[in-house]
Image (tube, rainbow, N blue to C red; front, side, top):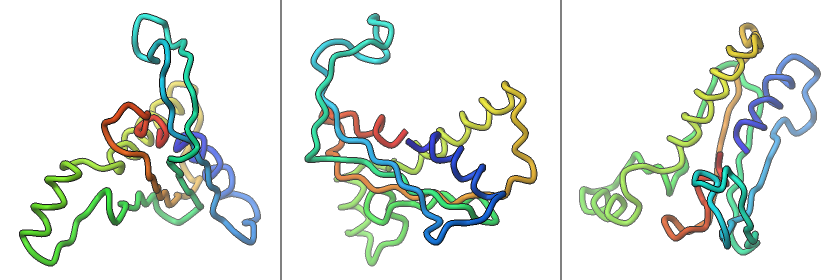
Length: 145
């Protein structure tokens, strides 16, 4: 989702901006029945999408590249040490922002490999939201990437 939207933002930053500059892509949670994209099935799977949960990525052109942390999944300000402890005990130390960072890094490598010049294209602002439960096999991280 994020890589597809990065292409849109880079292309859109040169032309006339639409009334709503945000572009959104949504991916629903997935339950794998057979196979796994990273195992011996060579990426072939049989899976079922679950529309109860989804991950969304929003992107718009901007002067700089800005990856916005999610207020719940990527907390960075707390009212107390107890709140900090509670948040990291529940969510762990890494939210979805690291997935956006890794996606942008890989997108840059892809563009270099295929001689796609990104200089002078402007930047983009990238946001994400998700309600896919973490670490329960619903492909929440794949939905963001």
